Structures are given as C-alpha cells and as structure tokens.
Image (cartoon, protein in one colour):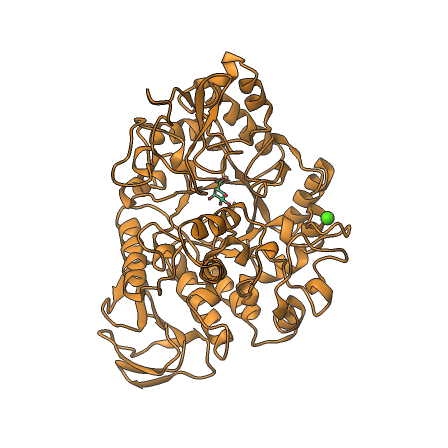
Length: 551
Ligand code: GLC
Ligand code: CA
C-alpha cells in the first residue's frame, strides 16, 4: 500500500492536457495516451479536476451529474480504461469532488426551482430583508452579491461562487447522504483518492451582515464542519484502507487544519491552504498589483511547516494549481534565470514536510499566458473582474495588467508537448490559446535534455522515496529574517538535511548557524556549489542546494 507521506501527486486539468479527437478540448483518452510521460516523472497519484457532466460555466466545478462523464471528455469506458492503464503503471487516480455547490442545471436545483420542497431544502433559500434587498451583504467569490433573487418564491438562493453554482444545504441530512452515495460510487470504480473542493465552506453559520468583510467569517471553517467531515470519513472513504484525501481549505485557520488533517482526527489525510499564495494580494483582495512580500511568504511557509508538524497534522505542499498563476512567472524569473528559478522553487516545496503536488506543465517551467485581449480569456472569474475593475474606475490597460498577473487562465493554457502548432495539444482549434513560448518550452525538448526542469523534478520526486528524512523528518527553520534566502533543516533519526535557496536574481552570501561539516550535496540547480567554510556559502542567482548527512 502506498504511503502518502512518500507520495507525490500530479494534477491534471483534462481540458488543457491533451486532445485526441481534434475538437480542441483535452479528453480522458488524452490522459491515457500520456501516462508514460507521467510515469516517467515518477508520481504516485493523478488528481483529475472534474470531468463530470457540466455546463462548464466554471470548467466543470459546476457539476450537473456526479455519476456521468461529460461527453466532451469521453465515456465511462474511457474512464475505466484510464484507471486500468494508470494502475498498470503504479499510478492511482484522485477525483475532484465538488460538494459545496452544484450547477444550476443539476436535476436537484431544477426541481427546487420548480417549487419541489424536498429539493428546495437541498439548497439555501432565504427571504430578503424587509426592504426587499438580499438576506445578507455577503459577496460572491467571483464578484457581486452572493445571493440571487428568484421572483417566483420571492426568495434568494445563496451562491458563494458564480450565480450558476448554488450552494448545497449540508444541514439537510439527505444532502449528506447523497454526497456519500457519490463517493461510494467512485470508490467502487477503484478510485483511491479524493480532493474535496472548497470543503471548509460547507457548514454555514449565522446568516448575518458582515460589517468587517465579504461574509467569509460566517461560513469559513463553519460550526459543523468537523462533524460533517468525520461523518463523511466514517460513511465512505474511511471504510477502505489506503484511500487518500485532501481538502481544499479556503481562507482557513491553522488551528482548524490541525483537526482537518490531524493524525488521529479521522477527517482527511491532508489539506491545501492558500495563505502563502496571497503574499501578492492586498489582504484578501486579489485584483490589485502588489509586489510579492518575501518576508511574509517565508514566515507563512515556516509557520505552517512547524505548526502542522508540532500538531501531528499533514500538509499538501504546492505552488501551482489550476487557480493560480504559474509560479516561475510569479516568484521566479521568466527570462535569463528561467531554468534556475523554476528549479529553486521546486526544491523548496519538494524538501518540505508534506505531500507535494505538481500541476501539469509546472515540471516544464511553463509560464503565465501572456494574453493581451479579453477575447483570449475564458475564465468566468477573470471576465467578471475585468468588468468590475473598470466599473470601479480603472483604465482598461490597468485592468489588463492585473489580469495578466492574477488570472486563473495563466495556468489553463494548453500543455506544451512539442514544437508543433498549438504546442501539439490539439490538431483542431484549442478552447484556450496556447502560450506563444511553446517552441522553447515543451515536453519533447525537456525529455531530451538531461539538465531540464523536468529531470530536476524527477530527481526531487525520487529523493522523497529514497530519503526518509524528506518524508518523515522534523522541520526547523533557519534564519527567518534573511531578506533573500529561504533555509531550513530537516532531521530524522541519524539523517539530516539542510535546504538553502536564494529567492532572488543576485549573488548572496549566506552564513549559517549550522555547520556544513560532513554534509554532501544531494541536489542543486548549478553544477557546483561553493561552500566557503563550514558555515558560509555563496549562492548565485536563484541558486538552491540541498545538503545531506547521515551519521
Ligand atoms: C475551487 C476550485 C476552483 C473553483 C471553485 C468553485 O476553488 O479549485 O477552480 O472555481 O472551487 O468550485
Ligand atoms: Ca477532445
């Protein structure tokens, strides 16, 4: 059985991965046909973002039917074939379960809208305020009010995301039973992992106006959340050994995560949190241009590493996913130090305590989309905010600059396979444009190059399996206040690891509180590292080095 502490998960956004029938959408057969590539990287699981029947308003995070495959991705036979072929290669599938909300096209919601009380109670309908305005001032995460008025009922329904994604009512036991049924269905198909979308938002607290923010403090890590997760665990995936689970925790607190992913709490195996990916926001406001705050980034990463370890809880560790810009563009360098910076960023994550997640194309150092026209954008959140920003008085060119940095489409451009039209992703017209740098950045070239980012990831993934200290070691931060370097130490029995990374494109000298005596270089992103004396090291631009010692 797999040990999730030694595992690495590869995330696939099937729509943008590989298209086998030329319709411009990636499909399940496309994933199957690229399994050898994924195997080569050395990962243990593939997390597939949703491919269930969906009107695709939010690219499948608006589910219309949890039991069927959306025809644009293929058929149930294609899914079974994918699972079988993956298994042959020692890879298990992790499915993405979206249970905070459904699509408004889901049968339940359609029945609710027709006035069926049973199904109305699957969702959250409320009367407006006496003046007729929405029940609370909460904002949708995709912009605008979180409430939609339904004239037939003179009531509003809650949608924390798009208006087409009504929130489910988890207080209703029938809803919880439906959800359990879905999980059991996919478990029977041999699925060995589940990712739960924005799962810490399912338990709504009081429905009150928020005079301090957008409402999130009322429904984030809500009053019954731990009870619901324990119940889900007990009724479904907890009944079978070897299933791994990860919860996507939106604006969560570390204290709650101790419990969500605690060794003995019987909730989930691990959690994603996003605090480290808000260091280029203004508070919670993403649609602004603010330089990344390195000090804060380091502090958050260190605090979570240490806090989760001290409380016997497990992190998912990552820089990238389908909602985040590309990390090399965000915290690294797209230009001269592209390769070094991508490898440096990977080093930090892959030597952490936690299960690393690699998002498709990250292992190639894929960069932000570089879109310059709104017609190139496909994401509902980006399109909404492009309008909202201009309504707030920003010029169009300022709105574009913000989208270029923060849009989720930055990570959704097609996977760059080779130096062919559309990066070899499709023979048709892709649903979203390929990044123009595909001739330089693509899988084929990197597979041929021993020194590529791909091969560096491969090595890091292998190291987690070979060195127990990486999987199981303690975490100790080094030099919290250094303005350019991230350094930390891991210890496990007689094994020790020191990870030292220069986050900037300039030379720095770093003096350690630890001795380097007896350590060997396990991996680094330059040919040779200069260790000057037993405590001093010279780091070149974006240089990262991992030192190892076993007594
Ligand atoms: C999660 C998903 C994101 C989606 C949202 C609503 O944050 O990762 O893509 O839009 O939930 O389901
Ligand atoms: Ca297709």
